[in-house]
Image (tube, rainbow over all chains, first blue to last red; front, top):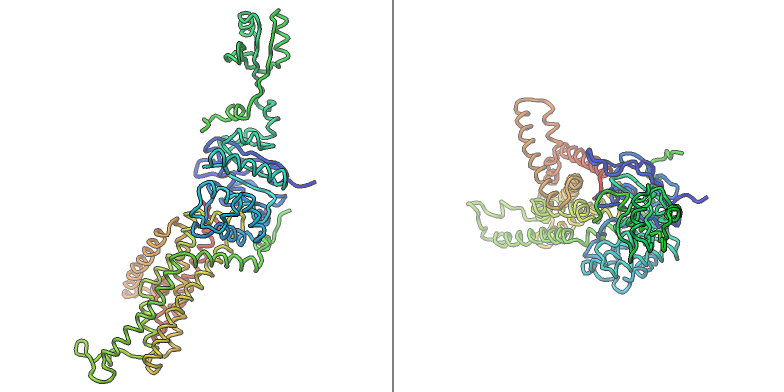
Length: 306
Length: 285
């Protein structure tokens, strides 16, 4: 059985008395596109730095492709942490050659391939100081790709990009996962993007993992067994009165058109329909509202999303 | 099962990989302004001293009417030989400017890269950190050696053309002085690397090292007082101070002080060990 691409067990990092990452357990399987979510200050970047060995960890362990010594797996991991930094006076190609030399992985062909993947082959021999923020971001991804790693670790890769740039990066990552079979571990604020891109997500809150699984699994209600439905009835007044009397049903406002939106807690949409019908109320429409990742995120995290 | 092999064995770091890191580091360090400035200053030291001595020699009248300074004939005050030119060029080189520029290059390579996050980019694919330090040190040491050669070559070359090699100061002795001076450069690089693990900017490293050397002067004065008072052991400590180590280039004058080299070795060893220890535990920003 193939080992997982990335596993952390009990990963902990403190800064003084503040615990930035607390006993973090996460598991990224090979082939996953794993979205690492959390509000600002939740500890995502600290966790990524610990995983990559940039900062010390106070406790816990990191396993990359079954190896507890990440230094031995360096050729298998490409990474971009926050805003990528470059020697501005060097050309893009020279910066990538430097990365190859230090990593001990990659060659001229893989550099050319990486530059082509991010669409910078035409400007590879220009100084990076002439690059825009978006081009630097793409060059950062190219640097992570040189040497053809099996795992990509990207921290906020769409930071500072315009909507077009964001879409390009999203499409690039999707293609890398689909065509090249790369495992991708990506932290992001952009929940809509993560929802479109990621097969599994982990949600971090104050240094702790509060939920991990596929988007569908999490939405189906692990930990947040609340469903919202829109209801419509020709007899709206009776419907309102009946809903207010039911246990586990909370009216939260208007839905689309004349519909009422209610939140169900421990009651399935089918049971609600049955109870209303038993009271002689005609239900002309009952539409379960699909919760988005954003709803889930806001439910699981107390911090305000910024 | 726990891997009990040494980290180097676990890292899979090969000599070829280490050489490619040194090559990449050389490209970065030599591409920076400070390294190019060091080389230009080194050449200027040799050329300026050779031209100045040729001018003085001409003033001395080439054995005719000897010009005088404070009543003393120049030809008796100054030795005109290739060795003397090389010696004065080395003194000028080590006076202030070149050690400062070498310190700048050291600071740019470590503290500068920590500050602008470019060091993070080579460590996200984790190589053993000692290998990064080793690559930087080797390139800086070679830079120091190149600057020694760039001062020695024009000074000794022009000195031979202008004055020949006869004189009390032998060319071999001066070359030995350049070698000793290179060793003291290594001490300075080691100190600069250690300070770089505490600072995040080039300026802070330069100021920090200066303060360290000034503190060294102060401590030496205190130790001098202790020696004067007859406190045994103070002299041994004083000889291990960086200032003493950095002064060992004066050995070329013939006044060799083995203690200066012991001091240099101690400073170098302690600084490199502390740098390695600090860098290993450093949270890379």
